[in-house]
Image (tube, rainbow, N blue to C red):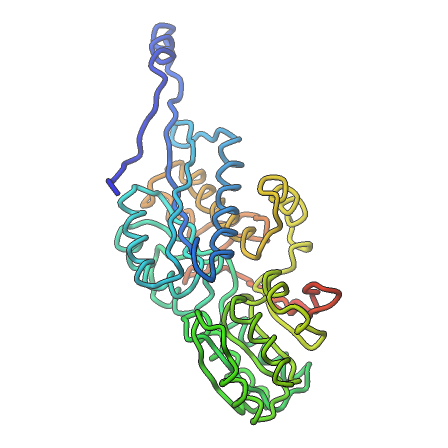
Length: 381
């Protein structure tokens, strides 16, 4: 894609009239904000959800006709499909920087965000992920990398402790999809289980494209676990729970935010029960400061329900825009310090970052399958 710089679209006739009257009206400039996530493949629902959240933020900001640096700013979303693939993600990141974006919302998955972050760092463009939870992302030490959601260390620790202390599990099997997200979450979970006095009786691996888990689950069943934990996305969590039921594996099932979705419920069908648990980073939508209003606006705009991360994508986009307003500049080098020091209220809660770029005070909520939906049980901070 050909590189595009910030471009100006003045209305020539109006400008001439203003000059004749002795005044100069603010010109309109277009500022591009990138979004990167999977818009195809097994994780496409997450990517589309993130894209929709970012687009809604752009539309809300444009309705205010914001003035930044003396110009009326019109924001434009440039969205790219990284297919949740690390190699594609770096290509997409380069394409967005070449397109002249002033900030990026994304990437959606950790496996994509970790390598892409280097591209944005080198280009001097802030990226804010709404959903990548791998601790490795912010451990790279990049000044342009931010996250508006709690990370896997917090989530895995909460789930592991919950399994042992609340579910009274002593024998726990762990499966993950070998992605940066799935493995990182599973590692944190397993470590928390051991720290709480539980025993990991099996550690198995699959991949994020798999649909047949019978061989893995047969080995797991032989270990006689109280709990089976899966680190990965809903595209695998659904069939995995169905196959657990087919094998007569009655252990409780736990997974993280990648499986804590409505799509997981659809795919799992009658395999889900009150012994199925998951977590989501953050607090329940109904308890978010702007959650109820956001749900209504989202449903009116898109005619569908929120998948998971749309509110976080909305907040990530608004964080970029708010930093530009505070700095009175859309140029990344000028607004990055304002982003680093941001203290704003978002849909999901307070938006403020620590020295690593992680959200301050990230929360984790444990859910249980009840009444055909994920019902919140407990929020941990």
